[in-house]
Length: 488
Image 1 (tube, rainbow, N blue to C red):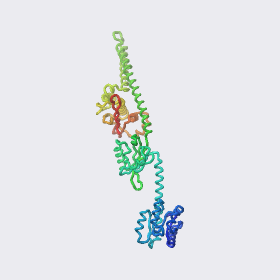
Image 2 (cartoon, rainbow, N blue to C red):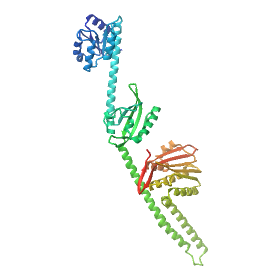
Image 3 (cartoon, helix red, strand yellow):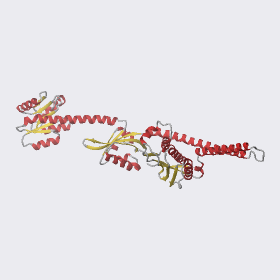
Image 4 (tube, rainbow, N blue to C red):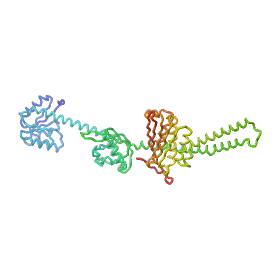
């Protein structure tokens, strides 16, 4: 039921027929304003003044026919809904009028006046719905173009981009005209396009929102890091995929800066550890060794030394020996000498053996694909530290009797697995508690892996042990220069 004010223009050269039409309309819509025109040309002149909700025109009119009226409205882009009235036998004319833009037609039959209000209501309702959609599209377009993030809309079947906002133009350095009809994979670097296509496909099939980090390529070839949120939408009955892309250049720059600073701090820490280690080993341990030797020779050549004094000398010598061992252990903890002298694999084997002897924990170490690699010094010490931290965590918290370390060089990554048969834990609860805990443990391992640009996955079940998998980008030394292979 139409409730707003209704304005109707009727073009009819028969006054009696117009009167009957008006009466039928006012009986249904007493608030309607009905304007009568004997000729179509007279109606055209008044359209801007009366702005009718609908125009009813007879097909056969003196001067200008109903068809000619439609043609003029089309030429002047005047979007007034028209209902064509024809006599019996003129249905073909009515069909032609519909092709020209008439919204409906009525044939002068016995039930003409009964049908008239219903047809008017249907046409007005459709026009208001169309206008509402037009306004909704306009509001959407304002939000779409005014968004701070780039938005791409693509056909879900073909993958071709159907629309893009202004921020999308800025993001990839192309005009909207250039973007439209591009395949969505073309906005990504060529070597990543297939990976992203498969990534989208899986989530489209699952019919859910997907959020992930990616890269896009600008027209000039510049690679831009982005964060993408994509989902499937229905627009005008069509299934589309909408992707919201946020430029992460500044965020990545800040993260890279923080990571670089942390890496430099870590490198400085390792250099300081190395210096202290060398000082402990080469000076303090040597001085203690000389002191022990002097202590052992203290009473040589003297026969009148009391048994008590000899016992004190032996005890003092043993204390010095224990101090030497403690200093050397501390020196090795600070900077394992085997890494530089014997290589990473041998150094880890020795560490695992010694750790097993001291802790009583059975440690099995396996390695593959590392002996032929000339690893960067930093990655070697970090791998060693991760294994140290992992075994210390197992000893302190896992209540395990067996641990397995697997280290594999599998380009473009180095993969480290640390497993135990201990009591396990709830991974989610532990991750939530990491920020509150004072002890480093897993948090230290996570931070180290993050600084190296790697990935760490922790799987654990109560009374089923724990598995930690670490992937680090493979870094090799090549003629004193660093060569890095990154997994993408």
